[in-house]
Each structure stands twice: as structure tokens, then as C-alpha cells.
Image (cartoon, rainbow, N blue to C red; front, side, top):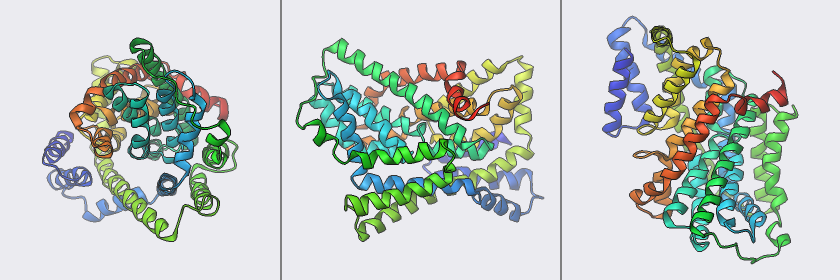
Amino acid sequence: MIWVIIAVAALMLVLGFELFLVLGVPVYLVKAAFYGSVPDEILVQKMVGGINQSILLAIPFFIFAGELMASGRIARLLSRAAEAGFRGARGGAGHAAVVSSMAFGSVSGSAPATVAALGRLMYPRLRAAGFSENFSLGLVISVAETALLIPPSISLIIYGWLTETSISRLFAAGLAVGVVLGLAFHTLVAYEVWRRGVGSPAQQRDAASEALRGTAWALGMPAIILGGIYSGVFTPTEAAAVSVLYALFVEAAVFRTLTFGGLIRVAQRSAVLTTVIFMLIAAASALSYFITIAHVPQAVLAFMQAIDAGPLTFLLIVNIVFLIAGMFIDPGAAMLVMVPALFPVAKSFGIDPVHFGLVIGVNACIAMITPPFGLDIFVAASTLNKKVVDITRGVWPFIVVNLVVLAIVTYVPDVATFLPNLLMGQ
């Protein structure tokens, strides 16, 4: 059965079908061919039940808040604060690009949104500082990945829903691993500055007080999200709702950049993005049902036992499978398809669910920039008006850095688990 799903999905991808059809059509084909006795009503119930989960309310709230900030001043102020911190330092534009993306990711939870919002701001500054075109393009695209890890990561919310893992613990782990990935990018920037002698200090165009004016309001957003969750004041879903109210207040009342017409446009964009995600989740819920009744996790576990594989070998296989899948399909779709089959096997090996979630999360990051179909590559091509092939040349050093971080997270579980254990106990 699983081979029918893979074959049909792969064919539909090649033919250019939408992702929700790539996930949904194989479900109905499998039902007709193998499970004809299952009523159609069961599929509808599984799809509706899949999205009828209170924890998923965090997704539309965080999307709405991110769109509000991207269309207003909060995103730009976060970027300006990052630049102020590195002003006068050699390679400061590169380091500021890393911190800006991490800061914006902390309020958007979306890598494509980060590329679109900050790419056109950071790319010219990187080029003006002396960084090559390839490196500048690769950096702008790659650092946006941290949005998939740093709270409020939509990918981690979906993983938590799929596996019934604590979102708060996943957010804490994502923050730790996101910082590790950010430090790895800082190291690559420093190496590029040393190797090529580029990265002239950023110009002292504004006084520090001018550069930081108004950023206290912008920095309040990540403080609310992280501080509220880990202090126990909010659940992740409640924090998402509060973030919308905060963004509305700051953009409309403090900065006065949000008009009623602008609010309607932001709401429309947010509704479209939310609908796309929830359609994928609904289709994946029906698919997960068939994966369960077909005993696919048990078959995977039996295979692992037959080859005498332990947890380390299993994680290696998971990484290889996700790396290959990420070259061709959206990482969110890959997660929705494969996590229900692989997570029970990971539990049987005693792998911490939070640790496994961050292994999957870093794989999702890599998939966003991996040719030939890395989504962020195409977002950047559209945003910066660059050729896909030119962007692809610049991402390879960053893919190597990602693979190093993936190996560290995979085989040193404490990198992912120490902060959740510290904040919330074992």
C-alpha cells in the first residue's frame, strides 16, 4: 500500500498538481483498491477531525500576527536593531543578516515570509559591504531557515500535533537549536570575511539612539511569546492570540501604519495561507489513518530489527530519507506523510520525542534551500528578481553548514533537550 501512495504522489508532483491533491488523491486510490469496505464518511471524519484540534488554533493566529508585522514597522525595526548591534564591525552586514532573520523568525514562524520580508532589505547591504553575489544570495536564503526552529515555529506546532508532544517543550528546544544554527551561520560569515577580506564595516549613518528608536515596541513581541509561555502565563495557543492583539495595537495605535484597508488585505493573505496549511493537514490526517491500519510503523520496525539496527542507525536512515524527500517535495508535506509512520518506531527505540522533533525540524530547514525544488530558492528568485541557477550556486556552503548542525543535533541529543529540561524539568 505504501508503495502505491509513494508512486502516485511522485507522479502527481512531476505533473505539477497542488500539494493537497498530491496528499489527498492517493488516499482515495488506496481506499478504493485495498479498503473498499471503509465508508467514505470515515475519510471525511478523519479529515475534519484532523483539523478540529484546539492546539492548531495557534497556526492562524501566528500567521496573522506575522503578516501584520511584515506589512508594518515591527519587522523593519527588528532588522534595524540587529544592524545597530553590528555597526562598525567588519562583516557586520553579514552578521546583522543572521540576527535579523532570527529576530523576524521569532515573530513570523515562516521561512518563506522571512525571505520575502528581509531579502530585499539585506541583499543590497551585503553587496555594498563587499560580499560576493553568490554568498549574499546564499546567506539571505539560508538564514531564513531559523524561522522553522525559533518559536513560534509552525513546523514544530504541526509536529507537536502529529505526535502529541508538548508544544512548550518543542519551542524551548527549537530556540536552542535555532541559536546553534545561527551561530554556525555567524561562523561561516566570519570565515568568508577572513578568507576573502570582504565585509567592510557598516557605515555609521545614524546614532545608536536613532537606530534603536521604537524598537522596544518591536522587541516586545518575542518577549511576550517566549516570556509568556515559559513563565506559565500563557499556553502557546493563548500566546498566539495575544501576539495578534499586541501587533494590532502597536501597528495601529503606536506606529499608526495600519489602516482599515491594510487590515483587510492582511487578513485576506493570512486566510489564504491558513487555508493552504489546513487543507494539507486534513489530507494528511486521512493518510495517517491508512498508514495506521496498514501497520506501516510495525513494518518499518520489523525491517529495522531484521537488519539489526539501533537508534543511531535509525536516525541516520531518517535523515537520509528526509534529505532525499526534501529535494523534491515541500518539507511540511514530507513531515505530514512520514512522521506518523516513523514516530512510533522512534518511540520504540527510546528516542526522546522532543529530540526526534528537532531532528525532523533541521531536516525541514535543509529542504527549504536544497535544489532542485527548495521553496526558499524560488521565493528569493521572485523577490530579488534573480535566476534560480544563480541562487543555487550560493547555497552549497550553507547546506554543508546545515548538515554539520544536523549531525550534531542527531547524535548529541542534549543540544535539543537541555533547555526544555532546564525550563520545565524532565
